[in-house]
View 1 (cartoon, rainbow, N blue to C red):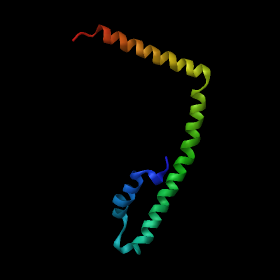
View 2 (cartoon, rainbow, N blue to C red):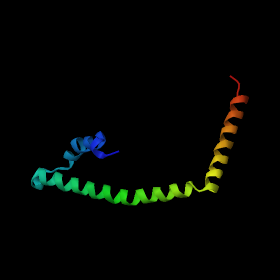
View 3 (cartoon, rainbow, N blue to C red):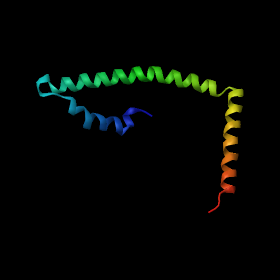
Length: 90
């Protein structure tokens, strides 16, 4: 989803960013642009690391042996949950 459609980012800039602007720091517009650039840089750095990491993890989780093991574990968890439901009295 694009950040242009994400209201949380707009709310961040409207509500939180002005708190970090100082009266003696020069132009509020310049301060806001600098802080916005810092935010953009951190955002870009984070997702430059995050996206490849998640992609690699996804590739590993899609391996047939790993997938089979995940299905075994989740199936066992469902059986245990069902057994607990059957043996629980109200």
